[in-house]
Length: 479
Image 1 (cartoon, rainbow, N blue to C red):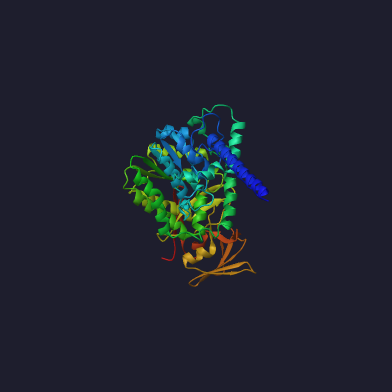
Image 2: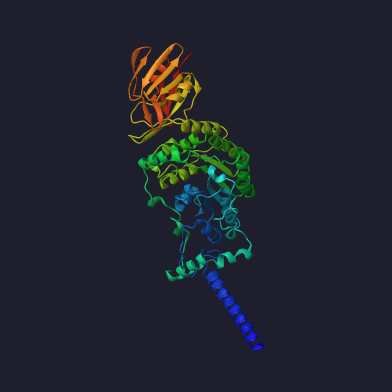
């Protein structure tokens, strides 16, 4: 019996020893090959770069030479380091992370700053990045790759995926690596792999109007958003006065702004308020400049530059860095409020011509006071169509709709107008009046020509000048 126990103990000991030796060999192999270049830049094989930005960026930030970094979400992925470097005069490393929170961007920035070589930061600021998630609580974020604790490294060296990547790197290597920064030119860049065009964007917009109805229902309190900004942006700026920070607001299409405004006006107001807050917090730092591209109508209304409501082409990224290098689009104390109000006016009264694929906004006022529909039905011609029920309420006109007869009754004072769906004629106090276009049900909204409704009751609509894709529309009514 004692002999059997001795053999059993020996077997267990040998087994444990083999496991330890095997683990040491695997760990050593992973450490030496270092597929993510976590410890060092690859020197004896050609590294295989991937789209796993959250995993790959820490190694690039630690072990490559640069003096300028690009931070942000997918809106920054199409920057070309050579273009940014030429215009901002630096050696550029792009450290974008798709769908990232500001906390993840902050962690990335910290790794880069620890190298002591960051002289410039180009940082795209998205409001949606300021959600509560601060990176370390995100299960998809490998925080162990970003800290300085070597005890966490086992998560890297014994990671099955990394071991497979190490084997692949060696088996498909082209020999000793000579990976200069220029070879990272197209890293994370999707510009040539997607299709852009107004038809795609309008289709995306038509879908988003319904899918994003509940958008922002779980919106973080504004005070929480401000705190997140302070902790993840202001702290970095304050800690590095020697570094120049270029912050910019990415130019989403105007239809993205419109959907955000329509689905949750209060939340949209928070987005605009954060522009004020961020400027106030950063304006006192001499090493910071902020650039506003969301009001650039040459970009945001040109739907051919987008693949969906938000994501623009690489050509726009080049326009952005060109504008920054030349000092255009700079936010100042003198133009801050003007820019905020312009973006609001652009977003709240957008008109889409689905026939021509064109987009513009109206700068609407009633008796000199700004007004908003929040959403205007699409049009197929030159006549602006307004949401009739909301329009009637705005003008103080009583509205009633008989769904069976498809008859709309409008009343103001002693006058009554009857409009029939599908007809371009109205019966006003028994007299037939021609409308600028037929009353129609457009995407579930009863729409009528903007200019015709006030005219039924003695009012008028005046179309003025167009500027920044804003067409002035002045309504005089009931005065």
